[in-house]
Length: 68
Image 1 (cartoon, one colour):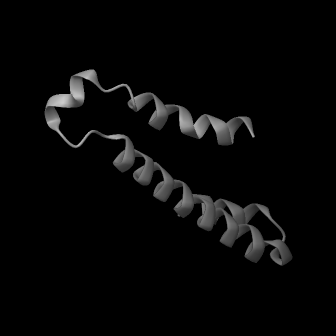
Image 2 (cartoon, rainbow, N blue to C red):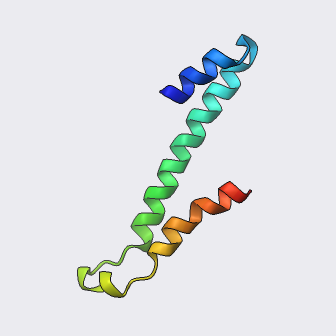
């Protein structure tokens, strides 16, 4: 909610609709991708947690978007 309020207060009125809705949509997509990657990369058996190295994928994936 703070992001949408900041967009509304800093942009001209003609641009608020486009940037306000796109920032909300991208935030929702980012939350979904993080949850999806976490669900896919976690092992099903709790005994495998000690040997699992896929946590690096979950932490490194957002770096692709930061670099892009």
